[in-house]
Image (cartoon, rainbow, N blue to C red; front, side, top):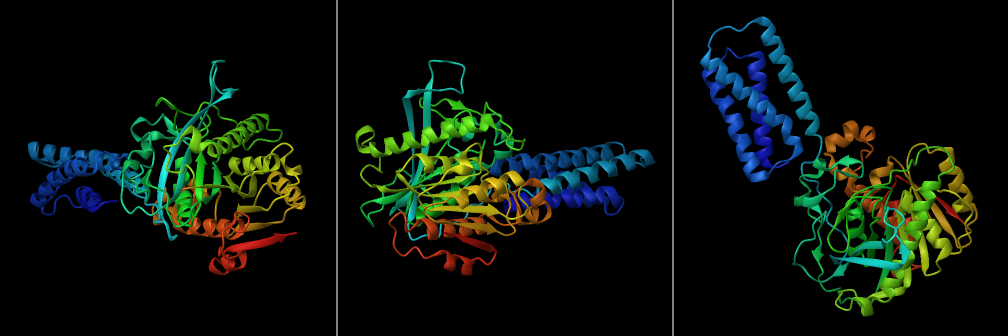
Amino acid sequence: MSTLDRIFIAVTVVTGLWWAFSRRRHPHRLQQLSVAAPAVAALTLVFEGVRWQMVPWLALAVAIATAAALRRWRPGRSRRWRRVIARAAVGVGLLVGSLTALTAFVPTLPTPTGPHHVASEIFRWTDDSRAETLTPDPADHRQVVAQAWYPTDATGGRPVPYFEAQDRLPGSVGGVPSFFFSGYGRVRTHATLESPVSSAQPRWPVLLFSTGLGVPREEYTALCTELASRGYVVVALSTPYESAPTVLPGGRVVGQTVHPDVMGPAPHPELERLIDIRVADVGFVLDQLTALARVQPASALAGHLDLRHVGIVGHSLGGATAVQAMGGDRRLKVGVNLDGKLFGAQPEEHLRRPFLWIQSGGRQTDEYTGGRDRLLGGLRGGGALLTFGGSIHMGFSDAPSQWTAAGRRLIGGLVGVGSNSVAHMTSMTADAIVAFAGHALGVRRTGDLAQTLNRHPAIRIRVLP
């Protein structure tokens, strides 16, 4: 919230309460303040733009100005029932405005803490060997969009926008109406577009990232940039037609067209189908990265990827994707599941490479814990189970940044983001991933999980053989 926003809201609150409870005191000053409210509103619109949170405050300012005009035009006492209605309307306006003020007008993402600056490049590929099964056209082929976040030495350049389709968002994003994201054009991602790869080393280990069901890759920007600043190329995959927005080759923006039920009882054939598609996407992206210098020689990343050291991280449905991809593709040397429930035969995977399971705090369902324990009991390459006490499922994404600190404390549990800040959750998650996966990906001086536990007392650990 900007200084101008705060001034406007303060003027509107004072004027509204004055009209409701003390309109006969200093009426001349009240008239002046009533005119000032819409004037400041106009300045806010000009300099800060339209944000949905300002709508109730703008409505209240207009109502106040209208009341002042009527009072000047028809001075005298008003009837009691009109005063009661007016006071109730002011109260409702202030309540609704106060609730919107619990959200972040422009979310603030944490500055990456690693030793490197961060850059990003977006790839759009078409897999001619696969039909697109999520559209009705049998001639469609699977199109895969991936955004790479990587270390750079550049300190300046074109900033990476949060949503590349900011001005063309579909009707909803992750199940939230798109107007909610009206201020996201001002979000700082702390990354530059297509800057050269850092010269600190010739090649960099790779982490593929698979998102939650229906959640766009952009909503994991904080974690991806943090990992990139610590020396990893993080390749976040979009899932066209399953999440929104996705900008396909040619510039067409598509939204979410499939809405499977993740909470219903087993079996979950639709979710298993989506995971199969995602796993095929992972394999295809690895093929494209291997051929990057040939298929896209102008890419900043061409020749700078250490494809002998590749891991995969996934959140929610992406965590289940990580399990299945690890089981079928030996190019993946390590995996991390961020609070993802397993489906179908996934709990029976006997993974022979290291695997880390990180779960949120609170009680989990029997389906969640049963699948988790069967998978972890069958690990052949070692692993660990970490529980982030006090966290909540969507806390692994950027969702906490959409609310103010007061909003998270008051209704964070109700709206599904928890009370932890995105900076706190990103720090814990990145520390755990780097400490566990770094050795498998050939990175020296990554620390270990014991050091992570010392830094973050809220984490509980169970080491697996």
